[in-house]
Length: 121
Image 1 (cartoon, rainbow, N blue to C red):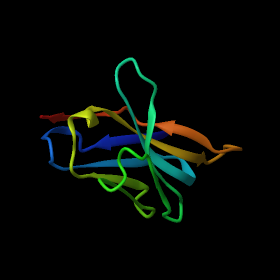
Image 2 (cartoon, helix red, strand yellow):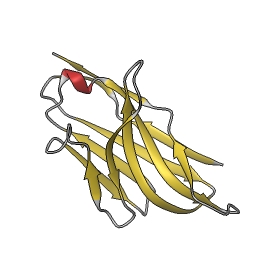
Image 3 (tube, rainbow, N blue to C red):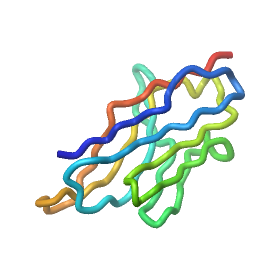
Image 4 (cartoon, rainbow, N blue to C red):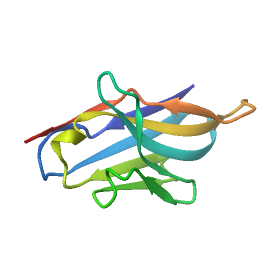
């Protein structure tokens, strides 16, 4: 069984910072790309940032220059450093990982349970 557990969400004032973490655990053989997505009520889930196994990042235009994604392969963990937060960043953030579990024949997308980020104006 594979689990993704996010932490680090919370309430912050506009202009402030938060750091999200997502730890992957369980019966893992290999992890390919990982990333962060976010979803507002009634809207589709959207990409925030992704990172390849060798550390190449990709960002949504809305967060470029403010957010930084990083990865620790030894800990099966990714991070999202969020700076200069804006009220429009207020949504639930989800961790995603493309994982090959032991005994599986292909990589599968797994998702965390989500963590709420609230930015007050």
